[in-house]
Image (cartoon, rainbow, N blue to C red; front, side, top):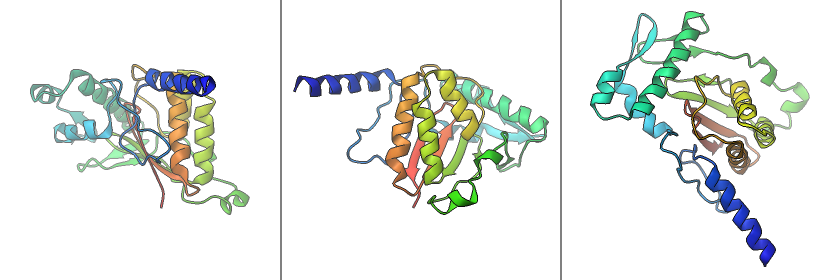
Length: 219
């Protein structure tokens, strides 16, 4: 009984140390929901209301920061969004991305050619793996069952924040900056959520620029 109590105590400590960067996602009954521990970690639902302050001028993304602040949005949310736009606009300048007046972004800012499975692997992989889609709020990508396992394994073995960020950059997208409050333990939670939602068919992942993951299974 003491051993079981010790394991539960260690699990609670791990969860309490990791920031909540999960939006509301499909959570199997055997896994507890992850609570929000840091006001500096923004979910997709926190960022989307900024859309009315976003426009495209001369082919670049522009955020009306002053108007957003006047309307009561938090400074760190606005600053984080501005940093993300600076990253995207630099990629637009280099011709890697383009954006239209409806905020639709095309192109990719990382080489994903190594993510195409070998012919022999395609037969055993369920679901789809797509290239990362870039949005004004962050990134979205489908991962088939095999790639879901690969990403989860990479996150599980990430022994530091920098290692976890490297996995994110390789599979999802480049970050404008590292959000405060991240820990190596957090990436273990990401891995557990990917595995829990895989169900042998792959997952759909949305990730904000604040590294908030919304993970759900492919159908």
